[in-house]
Structure formats: structure tokens, C-alpha cells
Length: 114
Length: 115
Image (cartoon, rainbow over all chains, first blue to last red):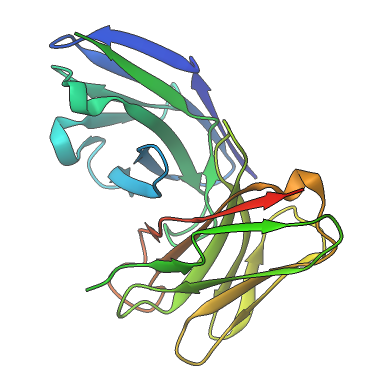
């Protein structure tokens, strides 16, 4: 069984500041990990994925995440926040291949202050 | 490429009724998954269809059932609707037998309101 914990239901940063969204996972098998973004009244868009290759994963829109097995973490970062980054972010885990049913965290709402 | 499409976009039903939601996967994909996203929550996995069979299932009651057609499109059926079934229902497609076996592509969702 897998589970995901996202620390902080809301995160507020200033435009141009570092974005850090936290995700910890639990999995009984080597996990596949994902970060998705959701804009209001839309579906989910994949930002990046970890599939047991490089531990530092680069995604779209300047986001990246680092897989740390010892800490069971997969935190999402972006060096400089833009107003357009304001959205809901979800971390998800799959215990098999990425096409398997995903277990999602509860999400983090990212607020960008001008 | 139209991506994953879902219909209808919005739906209002009454408690006890039945509802059918539809999903067409991304071109070239053979697998469809369904998720329920309650307001303010993360999506929860309902089930997945591959080769017209239910391949995986999450922790949802039998009131939730599905079907996959030979063209890979899929339906989600919910019987005896409850107020708690009000949610955004997301469909995602992937390709177990192809290049997209490590990723799921999501549709825009169907917003179901149960009164």
C-alpha cells in the first residue's frame, strides 16, 4: 500500500522568491512519484515524474524535485516564483508502473504575493 | 491530438438516481483510469480498465462500476447516488503496452452535483 503526505495545505511566497512544496511518501515497493498541477476548474497537468532513474528530476515551467529515499521525500522546488504559478499542486505515488492507479496527497494551494 | 476528453462537463442529479460519465482516451492509449476528487481534496482512485477488463480497483463500493469499449473509450456508472458522491470525476489515460506506460494524462473532468 502507498500513501502521500503533503505538508502545508497553503503556502504563500512572494513573486521572485523560492518555491518549496513538501511531499513525503510511504511505499512497500520502489515508488514512482509524480507532481501534478491543477488550475481552477481544470484537470491535472503533469509537472514532473520520478521513475527510478536520476534522483534530481527537472520538469516543466522551471520546476524540479529531488527523490531522497532515506527521507522518503520528493519535495518540489522552483527558484523564482511567477504569478502564473498560483495553483493547486498534488504529489502522487504509484507502487508499480506509472500507469497504475495513483495515490494522491491532499494538495497544497500555492499563493503568489505580488 | 485532442487529448483526453470527458462528457458531460457538468451534471446535476438527485439522490437515488443513476449516472453515466464518459471518457475518450488520448490517441494511442489503451488504458483508462477514473478518479473522484471531492472539493478541497486530492483525487482518489476508483478503478482502471485495460483490454476491456477492470485491471485495478480502489476502495470504492460496488455502486461504482465501469466499462471499456473496443475503441478504448470508457464509461463510469454510479448507482443509487448519495449526496457524498458530489465531486469532480477525472478520467486519465495511459498506455500499458506503449511508450506512455509511466505516465497518465488527465481530462478536464465532469462536475457531478447530487441534490
